[in-house]
Every structure is written in structure tokens, then in C-alpha cells.
Amino acid sequence: MSSAAAAAAPSDAVHADLLERAHAHLPAGSFGNLPAEIIIAEGRGCRVTDVAGRTYIDYLLGSGPMFVGHAHPEVVAAVQTQVAKGSTFFANSEPGIRLAEAIAKAVPCAEKVRFTSSGSEATHFAMRLARAHRGRDKIMKFEGGFHGMGDWALMSTTPKNPGNFPQATPDSAGIPHVLTSEMLIAPYNDIDAATQMIDANADQLGGVIVEPQQRLITQRPGFLAALREATARHGIPLIFDEIVTGFRHAYGGAQEYYGVVPDLCALGKIVGGGYPLAAVAGGDEIMKHLDKARVGDAGYVQQTGTLSGNPIAAAAGLATLDVLSRPDTYEKVHATGRELMTALASIMAKRGIAAQVIGEPVMFEVFFTDRPIHNYRDLLTADAAKLTRFNALLLERGILKSGIKYYVSTAHGPDEVAATIAAWESAAQAL
Image (cartoon, rainbow, N blue to C red; front, side, top):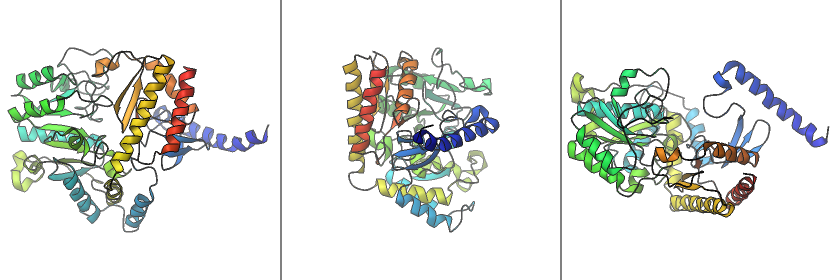
């Protein structure tokens, strides 16, 4: 055995041992996110290292929260200070109050804020608030839109054989079939179809929920504004799911970036600074349903959570927002993303590979198709197997990402951009 192989063997043995233990005790050997074989030991800035000692440029970012990079010194310091004071209280705390104040100042629709521990909870309670306020049961969402793991949310997110609109298709076993009649499904980016569906079902709709950027698909000009106009015309609450886009596209989120203000929004990922924290935010007229003293038993929306507003998570979120609020932060990260998107599209064109690079500079992806992508059904024309192969080639070349997304952070700099472009060149040639 060579000296290099001998040096590598202990780390590989650690990986093999952990993988065996994972398969023994975890369904599919994983937490349900990435393949079991990826076991990360630590992260610094925009790079992570696995338990075998391999280091990657990280475009996964913990599925998005680590927008200022892993182990940012200011976030770490804030967390360490709070840990010494206590972990959780099930009561108000200063970090949570200050974070709610910061969100209300930053996010256009946010007059009041209620914390949860996960994005799935936040979207769940946003829909419950809308139904309570409106006094109607049905919710309209868009095919391909992801709104968390709740029964109401997991409808027509990834249908293999999309049905006729507005029929909903459950995405998971174990969802009560009766709920399919309570969700209406519309095509994203189709102004006429969406507004006609709102008009036709206005008397039954409790709310409309949408990702302002649906996964990677950006709005066609005027789409979000048309939703805002149609819902306002009927007094139907419009919910922006900003779990991903909140504090990412701009400091005020996608509603600032696109210039359309909803009635409610769900926030997560970045707002918790890498810790379990999410929130529902909106105007006082709807958020008052969380205050029994104001609305009485009939209008009261019950919501509690053991770790909601956790002070450690709130301290991390506050430190993260402080970093993001500094001058030129968003200009720089958008410039980095634009450089990457332009380079990726150029590489595919140079190789004669049919591909579409879609998204915004802060999160994007390449899909292997010659057709423009404006909605979920356009995505189905892409060669999924080729993307899987491309991602595997990139992992071999030191690039870590999710199956269908690059997240760009403030920590990605010129060295990472150059290394990423070189990896793309090599992987595209291997394709």
C-alpha cells in the first residue's frame, strides 16, 4: 500500500463504519435528505469536509440556510453567548423579540410575526390563518410548488403524470384522500388560467399560496402582480411562501425583489441562521387570529410549539440579518451568481449540449432540454438522468450541491468561482 493510501485508509474506515451504523438505525440509512453516503464532518465559509477528509465547494448550504457561510464568526459568537444563558424557555426572550422586530422592519407585508420551528409548520399555519380569516376551506396552489411536508402542502408538487387542472394529486402515501378536494391546482406562470380559477372559485377559496420564485422557475413579467390583483379583488388572502426566498433575493425577500406585497408570508432557512426557526408574518388584520383576546373562540387560530422562537436560533438569525444588512452585500452575491450562470450556459453551448440555465443569481440550475422552462410541465421535458450524471461528475470534482439547485452564498468568492467553472468544463466534457 502506498503512503498516500495508508494515510487515507483510517478516514475511509471512519466513513465506512458510520455508513454501516446509519443503515442499521436510519430508514434508507439517511435523514431523508441526501444519499446516505454523504456524511459531512464540518463546514467553514462556502466549503465543507466529509468524514473521510474530502473537501467540497458547497452549493448545498444546508439546503439554503447558510447564506453567510458555515460557522460565520459573528453567528458563532452570538450563539455561544446565548448558549451560556440557557437553551430554551417556552416563554418570550429578548433575542426572539428583537428578531421579530427586525423581520417586521425588513419584510414589506410583516406587521406581526409568529415563530415556528420549521418551514413546514410556517406554511401550515399560514394556510390555517388564511382559512380562519376568510371563513373558507379551499386553498389554491401551483403545480410544482413546494410548501413543506404537511398533508395540505404535499399536493401536485412532483406529479409523474400531471392530471387536469384543478385536480390535486397527493405526493405521498398516508395523505387522506379527502384533502384532494380541498386543494385546487393551477399552472404557474399562466396569468389567464390562474386568474380565471380564482374568479371561478372565489366563494370557496380561503387563500392562494405561491412561491414567488417557484423552485428554480422565475415569474413571467406580471404574473405575481396579476395574482395580487385577482386575490385582492375578492378579498382572498395571498400567501407568499418565502421559506427559500426570504432574505435571499433581497433583504426584504422576494416581495421586495419583485415589487409585489402579499397578505401573509412564510419565512425560514436564512432567518434562523442555520438553526431550527421559521415564521409566519403578515398584516395585523389576519395575524390577529392568533390573539384570542381580540377574536374570541370562534376566530382563534391555535398555535404553540415547544421550541418556537428558540433563543439560540433567534440569536443566530439576528446575527445573520446583521451581516446581510450591510452595504453592497446583495449586489456582491448577485454578481457572483450572474458570473456563474453565464459561465455555465456558455460551457453547455460550447459543447453543443442542449440545456437551459434558469433561476435567479442567488439560486439556479441547469436542465438538459432545448425547450424554455416556464412551469412544472416544461421541466418534465428535461433529461433527468443526464442531470443526475452531471451532478455525480461534479461531486467527484469537489462540487457539492442538491439534486436540482445551486445555492450561492456571500462566502463564495473568485477562487470558488474559478474552481467551479473548471469543474463544469471537465464534467461537461465527460458527458
